[in-house]
Amino acid sequence: MRRAGEIAGHWSVVVAGGRIAGTTTAWALAPYAREILVVDASRATSFWPQQATWDRSGNLLWADLGLLGAVLDCGAPRTRGHSFRADGEVTEHDYPQQDELSFRMTMPREVLDPALLRAAQSRGNVTVARPARVRDVIGRDGRVSGVVVRHDGADHLLSCDLLVLADGRLSRNADRVGAVPYRVVPSPWVAMLAYYADLPLPADRGYFSLTNDSVAICTPCGERQWCLSTDMHQAMIDASGRHPAREFERIIAADPLLGLAVLAGRRVTSIGGAGKLRMLRRPMSGPGWCLVGDAGYHLDPVTARGTRSALIAARLLRDHVATAGGIDRLAGDDAALDGLTELRDAALEADWAEAEQICAPVPAAT
Ligand SMILES: Cc1cc2nc3c(=O)[nH]c(=O)nc-3n(C[C@H](O)[C@H](O)[C@H](O)COP(=O)(O)OP(=O)(O)OC[C@H]3O[C@@H](n4cnc5c(N)ncnc54)[C@H](O)[C@@H]3O)c2cc1C
Image (cartoon, rainbow, N blue to C red; front, side):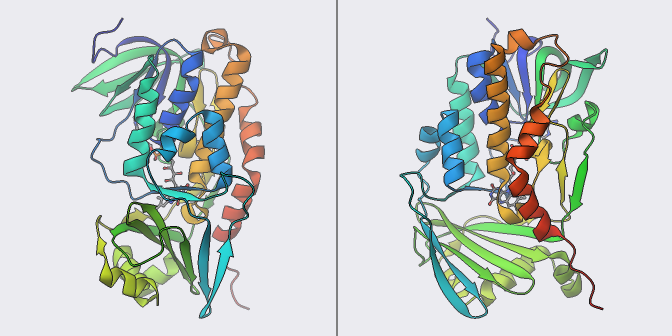
């Protein structure tokens, strides 16, 4: 038994990154591994201007992974439809009701990620080091055999049977294991968001509002709480010369519904987001390593499919390890994780195609 805080030595699995993809993977692999270490560089108090949204297909994935209860216990409202404004017209859309999981859900990462981390830690064999950073990858004969982790002001050398990289779209460790992107699509969209409380808006319906070069979205995401987000074209920001946060405020203020709503409620976080993003696909696995979440498959947030993509990769890895009979059975076999890339890409093909189409450059007028 390790003493608290003792991380050096051997682990069945080391997971770099402890948010949606990393925590879900740790939870899912726990029954098939001896000891798992999750290493996460962020602090518990970090604000993440990134949403988590999913629809019925996401609910089915949470259920399949055994995490639906933990996710629903977070208390986010279930939305069963949305209003859609375009060209001054508003139309109502109700989601098909196939079963009790036929709803959409949105949650702040500050709520969802800690709940997933607690679930992973509730497995007796998952340990979390945070804040801590995987700062180098150790290899032998082309196979990953361990990592160097910076924790508590010191570097620790760890060996592992499997390294899972869940360290996000900017993963440097993915480069270190040689997971070279084989498809990259630059995105022209800038995604911004902020959370608000006490808006005079429905708690069970979303709202989408489309203009020529932006979309504003409002989704209920907690008890009297809403997430307001915008996707705006980079060209629009370049033309205005304004900071994206100011453009966000301008778009929200100009919207007939949201402009009035925010005057009645209050903003409870800063406005944040990301731009100049690149969609990318990297190989999902290699000898001794596997990539889950944005690290291996980054979809532009414009289609809000990042959560689904992370859950699909985690499930594929779990199923593969379970079928093999556990991590111990894979140890030392360089080809043990072959085939995951193809399975992941097939499962996410429609999501990729939709996002890539929305990111495609607008043809120049002739
Ligand atoms: C503005 C915006 C809006 C979005 N909206 C939606 C939405 O509506 N719906 C949706 O499904 N998706 C949305 N997304 C996408 C979604 O947020 C991502 O797909 C999701 O966060 C990916 O999760 P992840 O666990 O792979 O990576 P991340 O959430 O990026 O987490 C990576 C973690 O790894 C840690 N880390 C980094 N380097 C290291 C290291 N070397 N060692 C240890 N830890 C490390 C980081 O600190 C972080 O905690 C949005 C994204 C943005 C930017």
